[in-house]
Length: 306
Image 1: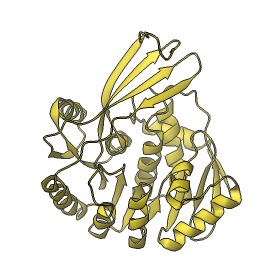
Image 2 (image 1 turned 45 degrees about the vertical axis):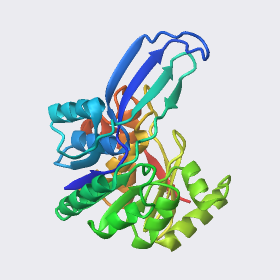
Image 3 (image 1 turned 30 degrees about the vertical axis):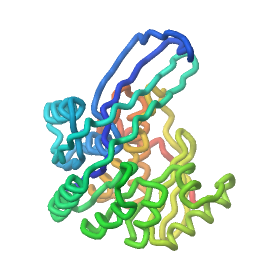
């Protein structure tokens, strides 16, 4: 079993405009609403790829009830920590005239100590049955920066950590199997610019020296870089017509976890994860993947040592 866990789910609304004009009245031609946020995107992606993953997250309010109904209807296995605070709402503005996606992100409400304790207890219980875990998302204000570190210490041997900043730095001594920041997040985490390939290689060496076995760094629709025990690698993505890029990074993490659990070696797992990200970008609703499409896209992804 793979466990998807995180503290910052969201209820997502996506507004599609033919030509979005800031500062003016804009009427959307299409509106979509669904469960999202990193942890839910990972759980949804894993569910659609197959198997019996488990999703663990705090939810609350009417938005949380909507998330519960949606995931229950889809058959997604889940464990909720109910909060008195409503789950945040995030908005994506998709402008078809210039092919842009603008994110309006509400910060997650702080969690009380009792809810954090409930989450830790649930994670420890579920992780005892899991072969892998994907920990993803920022931490709400007031959450100890060592939160992910503590979870890794109580969970399965292989953890994919999609985090940045101090929470990532604090977790590295626990030797997570794979970390997955994007290039901007990695630069901010290390406090240095990563403008060149040499900068990126040096950053890989630094985070791997601090504890990461693998580091996977995405760059949107551009080439993805990874570093492991033997070498650095550069992967070239499949080409798809982008409909909505939101959650593609989450599908990358989910795809890597699913592929590793399925028995693939890391290089092939990264290719599979990139294919999952591409499949996601070609759809409107986040993380609603199709295994057949992902396998077909995987064959298009090339790589070389770098």
